[in-house]
Length: 271
Length: 239
Image (cartoon, rainbow over all chains, first blue to last red; front, side, top):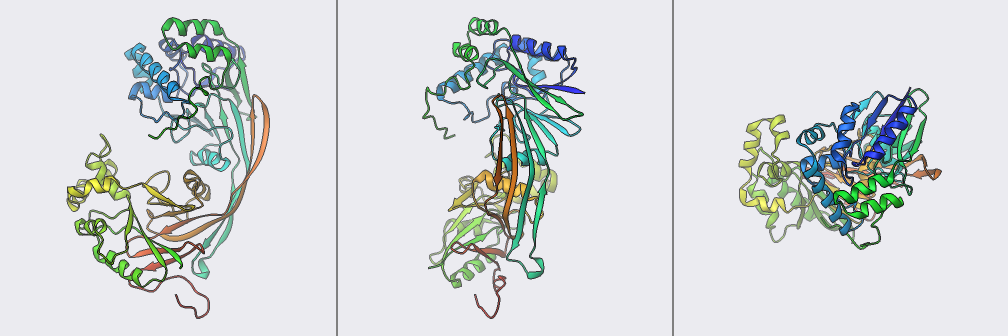
């Protein structure tokens, strides 16, 4: 049986509708969402209500948390101080726009969802704000999955879809400076584990404009990254009409990975 | 001259033990740097005299370099230094009486000094912390999975991690390791083999049990204050 995993919807209703349609066309009814229903995009209430209406199990993303609890992360991930200002503007805009009912819904989302051997989180099992990038230290990546007692970890947050398999691992250890009878050397075999990043439905940062999500076959364990076209113009117009920073529309339209990267490359966060 | 670090923790207000360690260290050869890896305070006894001595060392004392530990974190929580949070974990696990004993054991005039202490030190390629790089309350022991130990080393980007929280004394080397990583994304597939460079986690002990670390040779000596070093020596060598 196939399951679809979606993430980082970011209040982009046309993209969410297109992805849900694509999932429906494949006959998949089992969908899990990894959060960030809101932020950046112009239709936060509409996206939340669609997910609620479809009864899609959802974990809380970093934007969902911040809208409820206030900004509490360093936000060092912003490529510049200007980008950070725009992010904070979008945060306030979203907070003002959301209905109380939808805020309550976001507030009550779980940090993680577990289904048998699969664990679903927004960022990592440690935090909604931690990025599990595709090329991060392989042992650290394996530790995130193993210590979460999962075989497959589904995450989002990076907006870059990928499937990472960590296999054939081992670590040799030796106890030093002990009585001779206590000195031991042993090699520990590490389990094979996978991290699957669903990418982003509403704000892709993979170099293209298409929304992405993943389909996992629970029997064969096969995972496929799906790319879906949606009415980009509609979202871009809604961003402008809502009074959100026009650069949000510009980067969506151009599929830029980091739209603001070059504006203040010297930004070093000291918080 | 040999450079050595003396790594101490878990004094919990015990000035007598601290003085015994200072006395030991005066007799230890080499250029010694004294690190106190937290838990200078605790609920069992009044900690003011020890804190005063750490802040105002006697003229012939080794200067102590202190970081905060789990008990310091509890008193900071309870005293409002961590926003709205209070020492709930302590309250739930040990009860209200212990929370009161802790706050009574430390004069409020020391709180600013405690609040200014660092989480840890990074010296050379070594991390010196109370618990782990993930959590001040995390116990790292010989039984901790090597994958977890490696992660805690990686988080600090160090090759040696000195930890005190478990109260145990051990020196565990991660001698080698490997893992294969295969990433598939929209650009295709890429494979990589990652290896573990030699690293170690060292439990320094607590109270009278402390550790001497020889920076030049990477050797540890587990010591009990007032007694001979517990380093195992072949033949008839003397320390």
